[in-house]
Amino acid sequence: MNPVALISGASRGIGRGIALELAKLGWDMVINYASNSQAARQTVSDSVSASHTAGRTVRAEPCQADIGDADERRELIEFTKTSFGRLDMLVNNAGVAPDTRADILDASEESFDRLININVKGPYFLTQLAARWMIEQSRTGFQAASVRPKIITISSISAYTASVNRGDYCIAKAALSMLTPLYASRLAEFGINVYEIRPGIIATDMTMPVKEKYDQLIGSGLTPIKRWGRPEDVGKAVAAIVQDLLPFSTGEIINVDGGFHLRRL
Image (tube, rainbow, N blue to C red; front, side):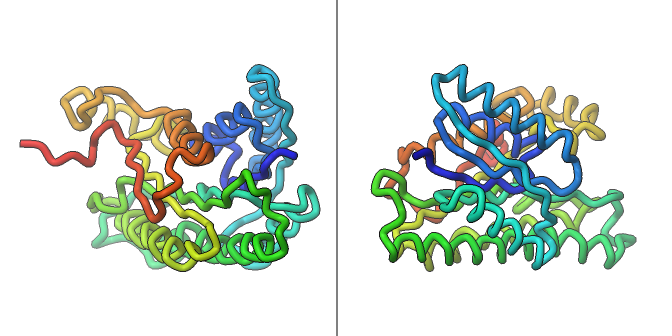
């Protein structure tokens, strides 16, 4: 029986990169998406193909749900239960950027509320639902002995980097970053390890509108590793965790940012 992962926001970008790497390792998956069903179906198809190339056989199922909506979060967990009957890993990846980058002196409350709801409240309470189910599995002996349950949250360098034209996004990511130490502390007794992966500048749909700006910054030395990050870079970090290569670590932050976080003179 393959282990099962639920990946929120997995139809494109970083979530898709994670799905493809997990498929190569033989993980079944729920591919959550908010609205782009065509992209989700493509990720499902490509994940199955990637697994076959790696000599594996996996099953992937798409599931539409807005994680900012409480009812739809519950439906997403129920879909996972109905489809696979188990959950070995939650990857909190879904998130949104502001519709308009606005100076913090002009930004609206509506944008702030939207980002907090989707980028913070959504993963916080989705993690609560997933953690309860994982605990139930461990108590009933359903959890496979060879698979340690895990929760991974994909955050951002914006958790600690000030961008005054998208303050709502920075505050949401800073708040999201507290999810990992909280749940790591609470869930360790149940054998559930919790991690945060903090991507830097990754080539996705979200960053394409500012590609020229970041091309120049990277070229001028913003990151020691002078290239854009790719979704598969984040996927490989998830792959390292799921292979239990960090069994004595929990609450850990893994930077996937080309060295952006380094303080240099």
